[in-house]
Length: 225
Length: 225
Image (cartoon, rainbow over all chains, first blue to last red):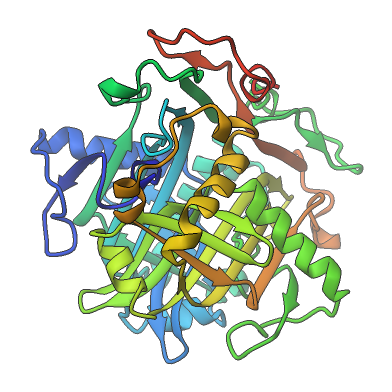
């Protein structure tokens, strides 16, 4: 049971730039590989969860994310509660979790999940006005490669009303579990099916808008894998 | 662009039990329906993200979750950082997000995501020793219906080493977006494909452990839909 959660105290940890907050269980690895592992987790995610605290308490807010080089980016309306708090330099923790499967062991206690997760600590930097259009284009390139050239780009007013923030990928911890169940020897005769129930994110067939007039571009026709 | 994030300041909000933290944008709905909507979001989730604050700052930790009646449950090793902090009655925010699709509009600004999310605020209650076995069985029933009778149940020591916490579903906010893009009239002639790229969680074929000796029970043979 304590094995069954993707939580800080168990499973393999991949840690870089250890700090008080990220040295729970360190397994030394090649630093470049660590960075690549983190980048892959971010690049696969459409949404991250951002924890921060204001005068009303701790909040956990889901928001879209993307990566440029060694920063994670988020954006939102200038007026949003989260943006107004984070531009002040409030400490935040960003977490991304990909669930890869349920691990069914022969004892309740040894049940687990396969997953990849990343926690990033730090303070967001505000992306300056002159960089906003380029950053939003990078986000679009992640969502739909090549689409930026097809759409009506953000206007001055739209960009001015949008806050873009980025967090340096410096203080972080990635964790992962993969593979089958790890049962205790004395449980191996238990008459229970043992193995993994794999989970993945799937893409269903694109749904064109009723007034769509355009042929499907590559990122649409290739969507439904 | 500001439309493209599942974030507090946009899209349809479904709010119950409004508080300072959950009255951002209220659309009155039937209270029973609200409860059912929240329950469905939790019941579909294997993992939630928990935000809380300790002397090292704000944290956002992914952990398995399940529901019994009108409480959300989590568990972990007694020794885990999160459990040790939350048993103190620390205020927490639990968030669950299901991403349902990418919404491709004719302007960058009107891009969005389809999603269902729930934020729950409050303080965790500790599940007493006499209730632990029953709560863990409820979790197993969510993961794999009927499996509790097949496995070796938790021992006294395993249960004693596990902390189970529950949060009442009282102060919460659910949000959802569905459907196609909402373009501005002046963008309708833009020569860009418009529509939705649907996303869902899929189940791949079960992988039996190499030493598995048991036939697949119903929850295994029905997994790969």
